[in-house]
Amino acid sequence: MSDVYEYRQSSSKGVIWLALAGAALLMFAVWFYDAYHLLWLVWIFGAVTIAWVLIPQRVAGNRLDNRHLTLSAWHQPRPIPLDDIAHLRVTP
Image 1 (cartoon, rainbow, N blue to C red):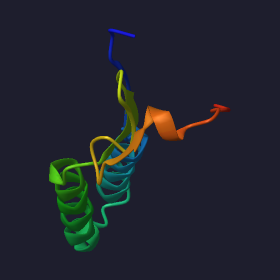
Image 2: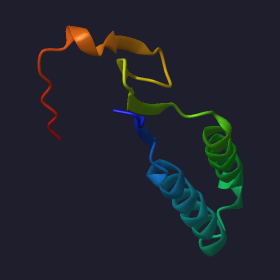
Image 3: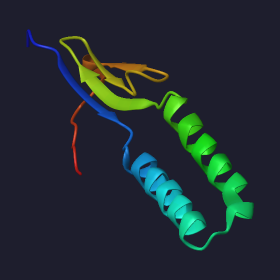
């Protein structure tokens, strides 16, 4: 085996889109109902959303080369020599 197989999966952006939609909906509700006393809530919700975007998200995945199978290759890698593996079953 001369190629290196890598499988990477980054975190989903669904939470970020949901938070942005929630902030926009809250801003619309404050404007529509003239509830400007709740405008501070829009600012806090927006700040939390921006902070969530700026926090680095972990990358999960595995790496397989001609000597090792590395589990969690990008966060606390655990290399396992291929000589120590009798068989391997991969399921979704």
